Image 1 (cartoon, helix red, strand yellow):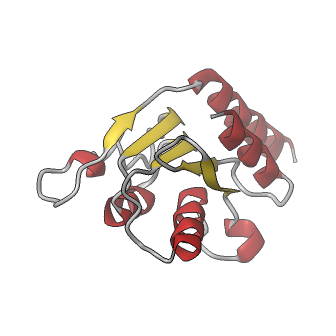
Image 2: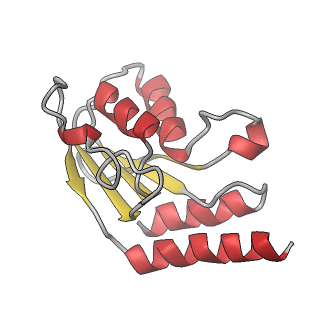
Length: 145
């Protein structure tokens, strides 16, 4: 989660909401890392999670990411949660819940939806206070400007 927090802080440099993600392989090695780049790229889909899944798929030349863990500072939205299901990741680990747009627990439970053919283990609340602090600092700064 420390690496994901570092990525989240990097998003602030270009005015993006500070969400960072890393993808771990089955041995726990970071194989992809990125942060939100929606503002930077002008692309609504440039969420940190989408970027790391795409990066690893291209590098791995394989869309199936079985054995991988997605670590993200904020609960993934429905788009990102579904992308993780499609990519067949084994686990999602996140820091802060997203009560307005969460696709993993807060609003939807996409990774455990029985209607889907792949289910993902979810671990929530890892370094939650630190993840919330980065987000709160960003939004406080935005309100002042």
